Image (cartoon, rainbow, N blue to C red; front, side):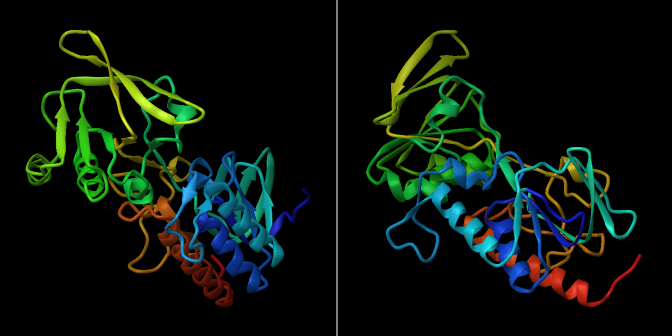
Length: 314
């Protein structure tokens, strides 16, 4: 697709935040360009049923939801380009971006590159993500009412996920590769005192087992003390070993917190560079939901529109 090389707004990322920002920018006649990256639609493209996004009482498939958001953005004039931004230059103005050895200019930039859940890299993982294997309890916990499930991890995230999942599951087993947790004492105590939570210690997952019909129905782990391999049945698995915000492109350029997330100014989407805004999971280490990402995409679009009205120059 041909697209302008000089733009009022360039949006990097195409999840709920990026596409919502595109909708708002397009309706404001800012003619945004969206660089979708290599995973157009973000993490939701790896999710099956989405039941907690407002406006879909019967739920919606994750990829379908992203297609609808993209269609809506394009309807108002946004251009979605399936390319990755490889380099940014925020020191001069207009800002410079590079993709596939092409250089483009932008009067403002909205960063919506998201965060990627850390995965284990074991057999069956890629095959069953979204099919009995999840990285988000608040997104998918509802599907496991009265089920027996496993949570993999030993930090605060794993304890939080496990405790939340007890609202639905009949039993939650926390699987940890060591015999002590990394979680804070208060979170460890809460998990241990929960009657629905059991622990499987010294268990290092090595394979997820399932099929096309059922999805995941079991996993194999190695006992780190004996070296023996053990197969266990499960109704579902949640991997809770943290997230990696996709901020490597902006290292040493924008302010990033100790966990790697972009820092925004107060309740706004403004970064430390005027005219550059951040929205969605790339700057949200707390909520990480599609609807909160979409809301912050709206904020970034409004912030960008107001910035452009200032006729700013470096």
